[in-house]
Structure formats: structure tokens, C-alpha cells
Length: 106
Image (cartoon, rainbow, N blue to C red; front, side, top):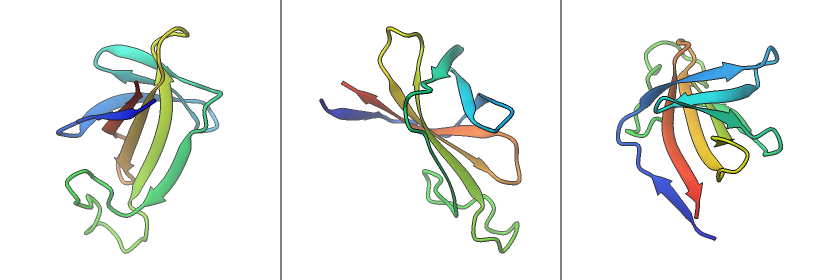
């Protein structure tokens, strides 16, 4: 099995649905709703920078050590489709989520 990354040349704004506890449940991407696999381990972290172009959107906003929230999720269209790994990020001063990259198992 090899992993291939799908190039996302610009950050794409996407919609993310969260549980009341703040756990991602689904992602709307390219007009399709993809469910987050509840059995897969999601990675969640905060950091500085991390945008594909190397910039830090909140560099001038504050002196906090973390300015970007990240989620790495395994999603699928239906129970028969292959898992895809989405790396999502957002500037902590904004509610908008962006897709940084997609990795597929092939």
C-alpha cells in the first residue's frame, strides 16, 4: 500500500460539522458530504504557522504561541468507499476551516 497526496494548490474553504463536544463529524468538500470515520484516530493540535505557503495568518494578531488549529481526519463518502485523510486548519481568530491537503491510500 502506498500513500499518495493530492495537491491542493490553494487553501480551499470547507464546511465542517462538529459534535457538541467539538469533535468533527462530517466535512463538505467539492459539493459532497464525507463522514468522519469514528473508528479512525483523528489528530488534533495547535501550532504556529503551518499554512502551505509557509505564512502565519495570525503572526501580527497576537503574541500567543499557537495561532492555527489543525485536524487530521479520516473521511469517506459511504461505508464502501476508501478512506481519505484530510488535513484541515483554521486561524484561531476565525471560524472558517480550510483544506490543506488530502492523502489517499492506494
